[in-house]
Length: 225
Image (cartoon, rainbow, N blue to C red; front, side, top):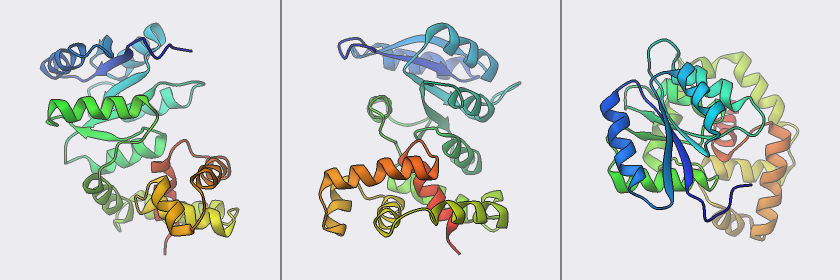
């Protein structure tokens, strides 16, 4: 287990060298963060992760040879994977949606201001998803679009089948998560303690076979009529 005193280890994956250089300069300037490797495509990213065992992977989605979505799926299917934060542009909502379903903890735009980028890396390092209300709006739109593969009957049936295993309180908790509420807000809405909310969320992870709150939200959205 990594000591809290040790810097968070980051791998940067992007096919543009200037983007990688800029991110390295920003991240390496922080005493609690350090870049341990760079990669220009998905295959190189997997090799870098195998060699460096980072805490965080900043993963571009669109890259030559192997893209970030494919690499993310492979990395997150492994035992004890790194946490993945996607690098994207506003024209790739559908791809981001696929990455979030695979288990990525959120996404940031490549032109995000440095302070916000660093906040996102630290947040993901703590295991908390990074998805602003504006970003969640875009993901919801992508998830519910009529031409989205995630709105097909088979996807909706699978999501609904998983939801039937939940208790009423778990249903209510899942819906609140999909609305973007944090644990304290959920506790206030349901008139229960925060510890009880955390217990419900742990149960949701197990019953729905998901890794994080974003995946819970996406499953709830997919199950809707």
